[in-house]
Image (cartoon, rainbow, N blue to C red; front, top):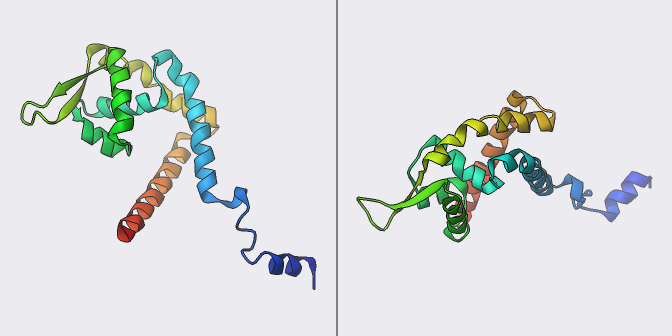
Length: 160
């Protein structure tokens, strides 16, 4: 028996339990690296990465409800609420009761929060430069990962 055949018979999974071959680890470690990459880019803005994500959504559409933000960011309210409170303490957002449904809380940008958008506009290109990738390559990768997430979510919904 040759060495490959012997190794295969000893490892019926075909070495699938090697960390570097795991998609889950590749995505996890890339996420950690990406968050680390953003830290110095966001520091001049006074934002953490999760705060930056909230601000991007509000720059897209001001006045989102807490539940809308939670849904879009895939964060539960227990994680999102303290994050919003820190943004509010920094003077970037305000929490306002919905005039139609007082149970809903809307998050609105302050003037300071609105002005922060301009300096933040350089962050995506700076991040792309730091990766050594072209923005178009990153756009393609983002699209593939988004499709993967949607596929996983659909499968999980069927199992639930």
